Length: 632
Image: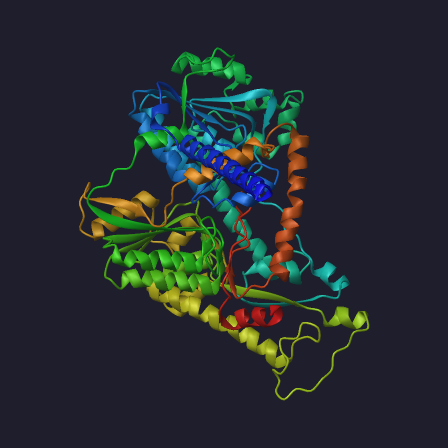
């Protein structure tokens, strides 16, 4: 008994120790959550500091806590465009805020529409006699779209400013696939639907080149007009037409060249910049370190603003990122997840619905699932408006065809009404290796799909007919929604991509405007007066846990390096580092198990963090059945 008693005491001691350990971990976690939550009490008199350490997005993606903590790298920061605009507008009337600082040192970019909206908010702030200053080590196109609207643009003397304009090269794999004896079977409808060209050609087709020339030309003109209007003294033509001569004129000093051309206003390091801000906003009473100044951070300022809700509710559902089957997101538009959000809101007595789209499309079945869920709200006889952000193309346009009004900006990329699918088969590679296939078939579809022996003519015809049927459905949806004939839609479809201005001219968009204009239209259509309604973002969640995870991951990992930091060699190295991701995405589009795609590959890919893996439902339709058969 003495021995058993001693063992029992040891076990009790271990139990007590574990309890104490778990209690300690619980209180540490609780403290972390509370400290991660933005505290309104942190707002003080001085400058509003908006440090954009990542990308500007429409919707923040969900951070995988395990992956983030084990990856060894800090997660990329994401900042909602509407949060930044709201903060800038609120700062205009807040006596505590003496100036606004945009720290662009680690800024990685954003969509042109988002950055234009932020620039307009900066203009409103300056009209309220509040100075806006930006600081950076490297300025590129996206940086300048913001900085052009600042009172003072500061650049580190060791930094640079380079304007490249939209465009670039696409990789083509037809010759590689031929050497590997891989048969990339392409199914598409639309002469301008160039998504499949990388697997079937060695260069860009004339149709694709014509389409991109018109699209990028319009987007580039919009960018130049915006920046030139905000900074009339900027010698933009000199900077973009002959950059080598421009830099040589400053004896190779990139920072001095930027100053001479009017891209920036002052050269100075962070200490000098901080001293300048302190003159406007006051010195930091809590620190005497060089370059410090009194400031409040963005999250604390937003928390201080709070949320005002009065009157009837107008629902806002966000469709951001690639549209996929299943429950993915936020940050990726999972068809089932968004449809569930919309269906759950049917009982919320919404006065109207606004659909905010920032997506290049994706799965045709998921796009249709979302469209049907939107239509169920429309069937309740409430106004439904759609607001396009940076991109609303292909599947992003498909989901918009159950609406009463479509809003877009001139810089929006839309259209791409077309569908495609790519399936690799390996009959030639198998034959080279001495592998042959033979057997007995009772019908032309027996044993199909066969990736080793190849597809029968009947299977090929069936797959192409499926693509044709999906495209026909797409055309009918657009024709019905826009009040056009199918022939008229066909003339502007065929996979062609349009800028927002041209889309308005050809009838794909009703009027220019952003989310605010769409909300105002929906409220007026619902018979609501100003102040008699408020917007409710469906599925909006608290960022507390996300902030905690990001803090923990950042504390034990190296911060993500800024793409545009440092010199030209650093920029080149960063571009090379992204090549692997680019190749992986191209390979995944060829080899991945996907259904019919209503996706715009011509649309610029947003600089967003890598999305976590998500649980995906089996895709629907013939190509969904095919991918299930291949992977079962």
